[in-house]
Every structure is written in structure tokens, then in C-alpha cells.
Amino acid sequence: MKANSFSIVIPTHNRSALVAVLLQTLSIARAGFTDAVEVFVIDSSEGDEATTIQELCVKWGASYLRCTNNVCKKRNIGIQRASGEYVFFTDSDCEVPPDILNQHAQAYESAGEDVGGVLGLTTITGNLAPIWRTLELDSSFTA
Image 1 (spheres, rainbow, N blue to C red):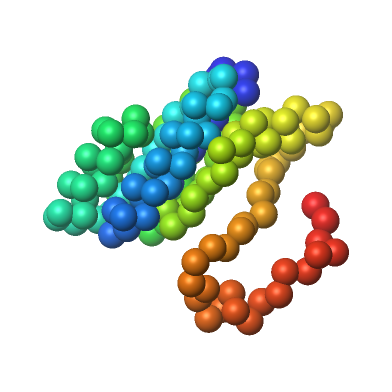
Image 2 (cartoon, helix red, strand yellow):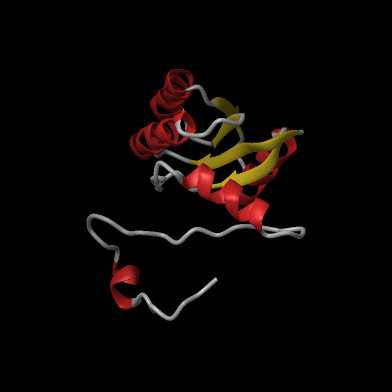
């Protein structure tokens, strides 16, 4: 295990357009992070979608893994393959900010004790799904 290294696990199914955006934003985050980062895309897509996601993995330096099971099994496969000190989960419909890896590493390092996980707030852009329209962000939330 390498100090401050990350293994990023991305489960997906039939979301090549979203995976493309996520991998692009991850490449920017990786460029601003000095320690090792490995990315695993665990996919259950078929046909052209699977081929496209494989090609995206090659383009953006991610490892492509096949799994036809549910998202929990996909995450577990990612954990089994992970060699980083920290395992970072994100969904294929997300985009990450450029400093996400540095922020997460800093959170782990500054905790001063064993940390089981670090959570990042979600910023929603674009059209909101109905569920998000019904939820309000409570500014009193603190971690």
C-alpha cells in the first residue's frame, strides 16, 4: 500500500456519456495530485455501450472490469482490486472537482486517528430530478 494513494471505484451500467465526463474530470483531479491514483470502472453494459466504456478507460488510463451483478458486488470487486491506501467511491453520473483528491487526503491526514470514511458534499448542476427539487440544502449541516 502506498501512502496517500487512492483507488477510485466506479460502478456503471449503460452510461458511457456520463462515464466520459466523470473520467475527464478525474483526469484533471489526478493531474493535481502528486501521489498514486488508480481508477477502476466496473461495468455491466452490453454491446456498443460496453465497447465505448472500454475505449474511454483506455483513453483516460482507467482499468475496465466486467461484472454483471448489482452495484454492491461491483464496489466489492473494486475493493478487492484496490492497492491504494484509500478507496474512493463515486457513481458514474458524477463529476469531481479538481481538488477532490487533495481534499480527501488532507481530511484523512488531519483526523489524527483512524478514519472510516470521508464524505464530500454534492453540488447539483443542470436539470434537477424531481427528488432533488423536493429537498432543500440545510446550511446548518456540519460534518
